[in-house]
Length: 159
Image (cartoon, rainbow, N blue to C red; front, side, top):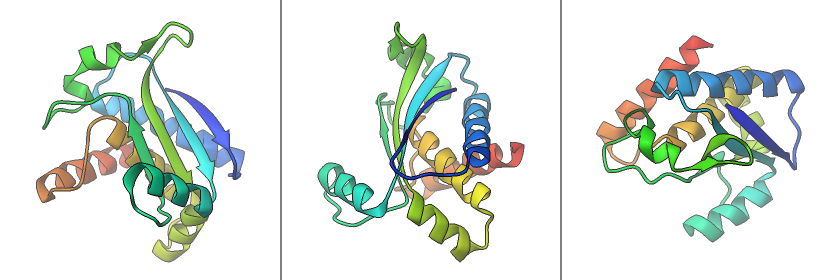
């Protein structure tokens, strides 16, 4: 997967490389054979709070936000909707654009400490979580949450 990094906040390069590998595994685990791309913005809490308020009406910071380009039919994910993904093909980049992910770096650091995870693990989890949303997974309903968590763990176990 091609990732365009927008960095308002910094993470070590080795963590970005691990996140890139995790993104590739997301496509593999979902059975997506198209060359895909995403944009990932690393930012501070103030920035993600503004975006969360503007687009979701929630006036507080969060760890990760996802903005998919594909609207999947209910119950479908990217693995069963290759035709929808191909509609997002961009001639200039030669990829199918899946969407944007925004990650709060302060939240990433705080959650890594809170959960006792290495920073690398928390960073890859937040990216995988965001990509799962871009691939049509959700966690609003219990049944959907179980499917999404299973997919996330499947991807993370490959790392």
